[in-house]
Length: 213
Ligand SMILES: Nc1ncnc2c1ncn2[C@@H]1O[C@H](COP(=O)(O)OP(=O)(O)OP(=O)(O)O)[C@@H](O)[C@H]1O
Ligand SMILES: [Mg+2]
Image 1 (tube, rainbow, N blue to C red):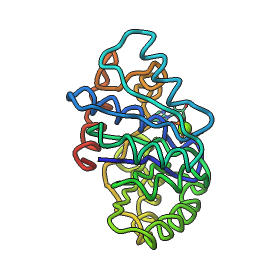
Image 2 (image 1 turned 60 degrees about the vertical axis):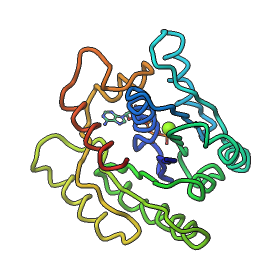
Image 3 (image 1 turned 135 degrees about the vertical axis):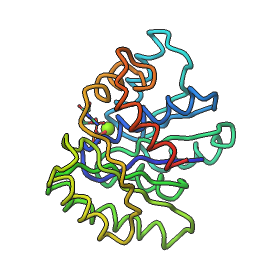
Image 4 (image 1 turned 30 degrees about the horizontal axis):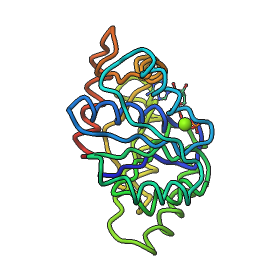
């Protein structure tokens, strides 16, 4: 399966989730290819840190910020892998557009903040464009860095706004703001393997994986 993590809004957790998803799938024995579609190369850096620290399994990772290269490479190589995870980078880029044409699923993380919610119309428009040239793109939106507590009004308002966007399937399984997510991805790890283990982060990631794959 090819899954892209994308949103034209920056800083919503695309790289954090892409790295966590890729490693989590590899931990179940699948061959995973992580593609960094962002010229910042953050996902690639995380995987290099992982490799240098000797963490197993290793993750195949390549950086293709240019959309036409990304598309050609994925078309040629994807069949060699069980899963391809594309960190599609922030803003409207050729890499993001290529990922929208190639992927089975687009995961759109967003944060419970007004600017994030307003920006969803931009990625929704790109989804419309992609769907005009292809069938079968599933688009899932998930709240990331959700506020703590079951009764956060900001979380609820953001979730309500997203359910109004017809292009998205809203996944009602927020990932909360947890140090474990930031620390693990920064060390080239997934929260499933990071120590000390944060059971809540582990449960949130596992729930997301079940919904996506
Ligand atoms: N669930 C979370 N809990 C705590 N921190 C998080 C979580 N998700 C992401 N972060 C932190 O938020 C910041 C932005 O995350 P990240 O770099 O993954 O976003 P991005 O969408 O890839 O950004 P960019 O648009 O710059 O590529 C990072 O410092 C990351 O560690
Ligand atoms: Mg990023």
